Image: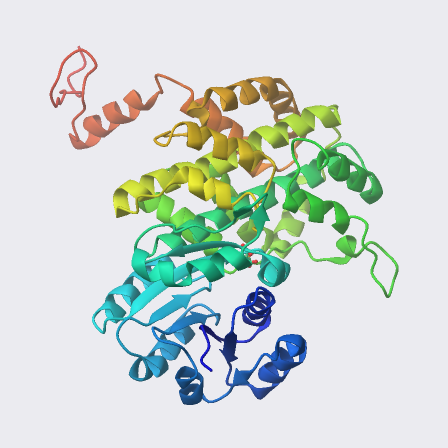
Length: 465
Ligand code: 6PG
């Protein structure tokens, strides 16, 4: 008997995804160098007689052709070394699917390298963490379309479902799958930062206790803000440290770490010259949080502020909803631009559709995004949709009041502040940027264009008349 698919890397994600496939009735197997990982797989997959290999040759020989391999190993050089080990054992038409959070430029390089040997290399983003892999993730595969059809049935079966729709779709050619997953993570960073800033406002602006904050998030999560991130955040505020019985959150250092996908999103946005300020602030603020000693000493130097403010929780809910919409809008805008630049032919409505379930940024609002792009496949920016415009207009009062009050009192809210000012700029027909052009031309003869006639102009600025 030969297996339909083989998993390489039986850590938490690989093992859980394989168990998910076995549950759905597929004959699958796995490979790991570490015997302990194989034992774990065989133990947890007992009822399906799941079998694992620690010998790569017998593992490859056990697969149907064309062979389908999924890599779930740490992103970076390990992916290259696994590919190098596999290559001599594979034949034309075989498919390697890298499901880690690889940088899309690495995926581009690997697609090109393996194409020379007639091998199909897929970059597939998977979101949803451990639970998602086991019971239904959101999956973003990109690569050769025909090769995709070989594995489509497996992906459709294991992905999360919204109604009957599986949260997986063919994303596009080349590294588009990893690109879309990277932007997903950029949005994830932005929403996490916004929620953290809400926490700061509730705690230091309104003086709420952890259990009161739990109630706010829980209530919000029952309405239009319903989302996975709010749901887990609410639960965090209830969690007690088993040793001390104190709220665990209060014992955690205020220094945020990251693995890089948010930073990559910001880097690419700069390269594509497509602003995503809320994501940028989320990345920067994780970095700023690491300067603990400096922050503490500067707090002493400038004095602790009285950050009490007078806003309602409903006004803050408006500010959060508004900013969350903007975070998604910026991410989608980046996808529109990347699709043009890299010729990915991304279907924004399909991407919004598969993000409605399984992934970390799943939220009720993704249905609105899906509807907006489904109505107009060439929508340039989410703010251009009439329905979204109505929602935004209704939130602006509370948004401005909350954000201005927080800033006036000295609360640090970089993501909220830049999100609002991004909105105010993108909705301004004539920006003050004419002055930048005049300055550039003044000191460097960089020329400018005029609104009243065609052409390129230079003025003799030193000769003030
Ligand atoms: C997901 C997550 C997942 C991972 C992040 C964490 O979609 O399931 O995004 O991929 O948890 O990469 O990223 P940081 O460690 O950078 O916060």
